[in-house]
Image (cartoon, rainbow, N blue to C red; front, side):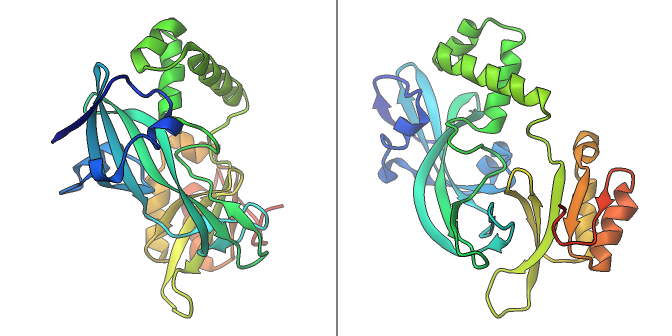
Length: 268
């Protein structure tokens, strides 16, 4: 891996990092190694840059979205009409022991059903946050065993940022924030006037897409459900589906104790 340009000091703020690194500094990836190390199902790594920032080797990963669909927060319809894109950068968990930033496009969609424009919600980072959900959880857990000042120094963050992350996650944990309680299962054709459908799994409460499965077969849905942890399965209380029998059977047969089914497309 090539070490690129030197920057006098470590850039703590992801909003500044996205502005202070140019496209010319990135190198195309040769394989899926960085994507696998990243561990975010909805992203794949296309390019990387390794810079010396102060005393730190910092890894910047340019990523692309795996799916071209988003859930409208106004009417809960699926949309594939990208209205606007702009660069976004967030701090993520270390990769190869190096502080890591993710660069990707924040997308705004226009809903075909209600006509409103909305910003896509992402499962790995909350709106307007400068750190991924996984990194914020890492900071929170570190604060349970170490002083906040030590965590701030170790992670290259300000003490005020560490305090804000800890207090926010502590409040969310009381309200079971971050878990999927209302699961949406729907199908959509990603190409208009085509009959090749994919199955879209969404978190209706958080208004974000969790997965886009390649087909609408019962076995495909069952495999996805089986991939969930016991904690994730137990958190789900409602499932919103159209009442096509294979969807209903897949949810019922695998987790009848955890799912309450509704005859309507949207659980009210």
